[in-house]
Image 1 (cartoon, each protein chain N blue to C red):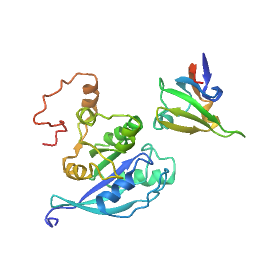
Image 2: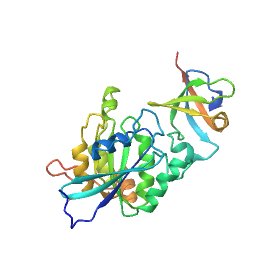
Image 3: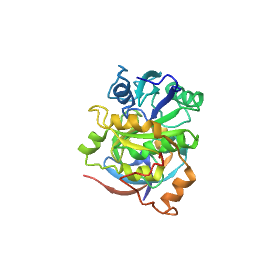
Image 4: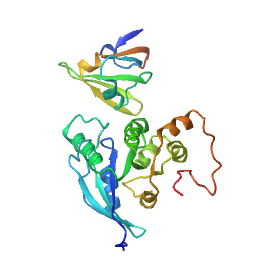
Length: 198
Length: 77
């Protein structure tokens, strides 16, 4: 049951086409957005509701986009959604087998100074292709929560829902410093990945 | 040896050295300077070329492929 005194928080699901945003959206909201195995299936947005920890979230499934400089109508919708919801939490969805491409849009979104959380989806496919993703290290570098998920099986969905409230604004200067080793690793306590959410 | 991406032969691998068109458009698709790729298919009748970048295949129009300069580093059988 949601606490009616708490304000509804909007969560935008942003990412490249065909990374499983709609599948993840369906898992989180119980909705029935159309899912297919080729890019460009979502050309308009779909919204649904998620209640987690007495907080109500409006989850919006945004069409996939490669960057925030739109090149077609679906990408325009995505960019407009981000522009129209400056206070929203942005859930950036990665394909675990194509992390570098996901990072490009992720950094573009982070430049906007919005609250972010990252979902590394399709972990099952990555596993099949013998690709391992160090989500804890990614979380340390980006400074936002990073959760490994598999939308088709439901793995990691609960953790992702719980982590939305820990979304952070990423500091790009700090990301660069961390990558250059200018900020020493803090000793993590009790298995904390260091997103800074606490 | 440097070539246009368009001129890579089937199975030839190259490293991107120069992008003479919108860098942003190609970067967001994963094509960056120093990235290794492999020619997979050239479609007939001036169709696109398909290159393999890590785990993903990307189809690129001929005009765009002519603007990407690569260093040939080898050929797979």
